[in-house]
Image (cartoon, rainbow, N blue to C red; front, side):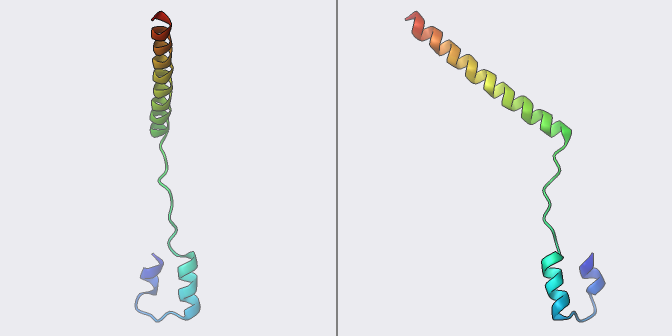
Length: 64
């Protein structure tokens, strides 16, 4: 957007420096509510799976 305004005219060193410093800003992709819920579900499922496997291993070791 800024580059389009400045096209066709010579920029001063101060303008070039300002564009370099304040120019394009990298933004992180906004995480939707659905993605947050999916991540929480996945983490909870993995946690419960680990607990179940540990419980089953303990029962098997105890039974032997």
